[in-house]
Image 1 (cartoon, rainbow, N blue to C red):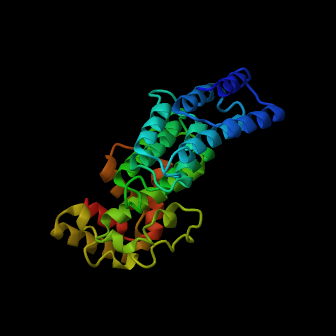
Image 2: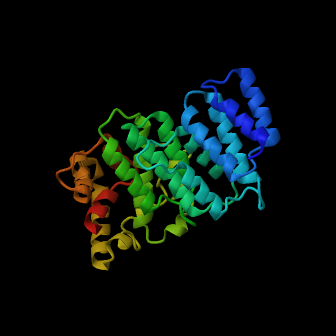
Image 3: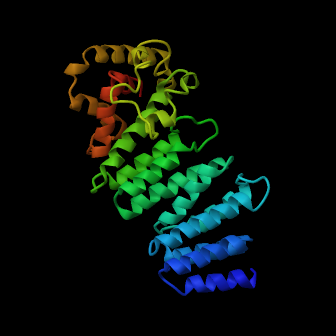
Length: 315
């Protein structure tokens, strides 16, 4: 670590809030001298553990300095190597300690601007975003947005839709905070993301529907109007190989398709309790249904009439 950078770090450490003049000077020196090594970067993480959240100016400086180091310091530029992914995970993964918001924001920015990122870094980003919500005991609007942004970037190669591992993370998180005073955006995100996973899992050939099953379509910034998500596919629940990937048994899959078709025809007469019976079958009859889970049930009833009845038979 060169003396100039070491002196700069000492100055940062000595304050708990940066004045506008301090911020401008530190920003200039950071970009002039730059983060030149993993040791420099680790020192910034140590300081961030003390200053994070106390000063929004510092949060921005930290994110931009480490992001630029990871993406620009070596060739090929804008690619995150396996070693860099290991280093980032090592700096951020503090077992039993609530993940720091600015560090999640750093990961999200790296994921956004990088041309290539190891799959496990994408999954880790979602995991720490969910861990933060779990450890805080509720979902704020800001933290829900972090989870949404983490989900937009696939955690597995070619996974255009929400994967089983990602869905499991969301379910485990909701199990911990489902009855807390969560921001309503958590219920909406949970419903859309889990429904996306279920639909892709039940589809006989999900890769043939890359657009309608895409993450952007379900949880992106521009979403279809309610009731129009699956206009092109929901009529086919009673056809083809729907539900076969779940049932792993053609007779049961056929029964599931018949159940979906019959339920869709009488959808207006199906009560919310009937819809909920599918979910309770999956999680256990003794479990109360949270607001997020209720939102999932309502979402599927609106967007995919008959689908939950097919799932109940296929599962």
